[in-house]
Length: 390
Image (cartoon, rainbow, N blue to C red; front, side, top):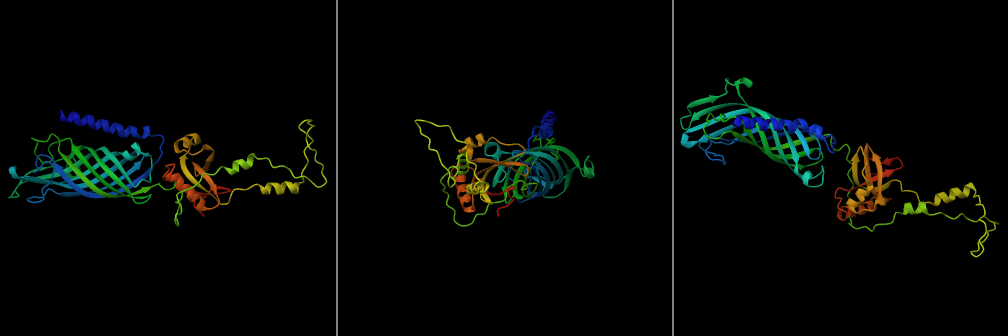
């Protein structure tokens, strides 16, 4: 019965892993990651003094392990990883006068589910993220059971008689746990994970009369390095001096200037007919203004500053977003939101300023009032958005 339960759970987990990439065709955020980790390795089974707490004297139950992990983050929520782990386990049962020692080699495939990005705003630059771990794998182990007090060997599991590497005993495992990741920068992260491994056997400690499944836990502290992140992220804004988080929203003067018709100047000697409201007269043909005068008039229209500073509020790779939805979401007038293309992204900006300080003030308002906490200042010239601030 227990093997049937384990087989069903194993098949369900494997099916999820196989279907996950096809379900996530739209990848909002993806990167590769390598993680080096180490920590405690503890056994939970029949030959164990206490149910949860390990003993540290009279045959210590504390053991350690180390692992290497390589994975792919598929989206803001889901990730897939492969792990290789080497560890040791031990257990003591004083009333039975027994203890055991073992070592194992584990390989597993697991996927992660980011809780912060499920229940909160989808972000990749958050300092702290909490996630769930679940997966399947194989463990290969050698176990030796001793008599407590005399150290007389009583039994062995594996040690040349199993089907694994070097005659180790080979068993399937299910992995379930939790993890937390702390962001140092775009590439470097610190991880803290704790996951239980349930085995399809009760023979790990050579005692099959109690726990239906032997379980061991690996709790680790790790360092992760992420590849492929930061390439599409805009350069960081400069934060210098004291900033005042206040700004009065101005009317879009550029749009007004385009709608206003500038009257043509009257040339010397030109007679101007005054239109009488009571007796309207036919409109005379427009006076042709010399080219030199037209050039002067065009020069009087204010041009955009170069460089031009704006505040970027959003970016989406491959396809545009609705400016109306952004306006409703962040309470910003839709005619203030500008759309541009940059490195394959549709980027959305607000404002047009000649100096960084003006844009910085608007950025502070957008962060504090409109709730776009990751808004930042960018610069444009006649060719488009610059990769870094001038």
